[in-house]
Length: 351
Image (cartoon, rainbow, N blue to C red; front, side, top):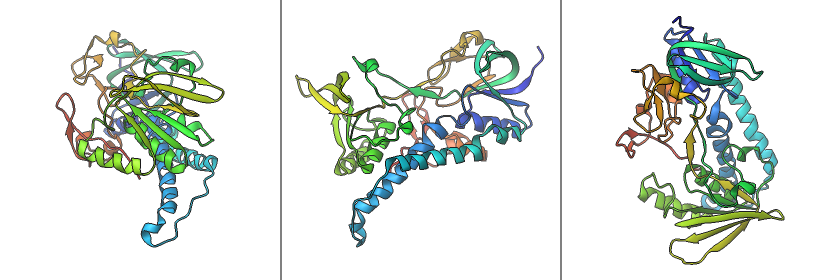
């Protein structure tokens, strides 16, 4: 079979862009396929907007706590829509500087817009936005399709308006009372950001502590700090059902220590219950599926296919370091072993 490319990268997020750049720099004929905009979670729904929002929230908090430095504390005047405009400006600047197709085309990378599906171990079919189809053959494939929010099977949730990490940065009005389902990295980061910007925030999680994959001693210190800022935590509490009426969202829950239900009310619900790999529709069965060492089924072709986090179900780590010729193992963060015993690094940001 004649090969169109040496390497085809499926997914144009941070990991996919980094992989494509390294491939091209080594002289491989490279293509990258992306269904939406290049940049992925990092630019559009994750790293960039969340850190920009946390920075603004941190500045607001500095106003309130200026007394610690011998200055007069004051309540900041916050125009939330202006804050979000700045977040979007930063996203667009990052995109134009580092993610836009011309950046990669100058490297000799072919950028293809469309949805990919394996049709054989060494071929994918790409369905373009206009309905056109094309087939590509490649010696190697990198699956870097990332992940998406997990939506838990909670009674009434599908009929209730809610936000996820993919939609929260599109809002322009500051929530008055935010309920966060999930005390993982996304839930905790957004809880702190919105609390510091002026929202009342309640965080629920069935686990008995926040950030359960992180060091318990450190997360207990963080919990104390966040509670001191006014975030209310209901840990060890299972959500039973949700509903909405007249602009109010109600969450019924039951604490592990209680035999009765209680109800919370708010105007905004953020579902931050984790993430799942984006592997649906890839046609992995056409690639003689095996099992990736970290969990999800992947083509097992003696090394011709590679899956990059987050699409392999592992804890998220940062791909940017790959642009400097380093592997994910060399990131500057404390290593830890996951449930399979693999050492890895991950980061959660606070201000």
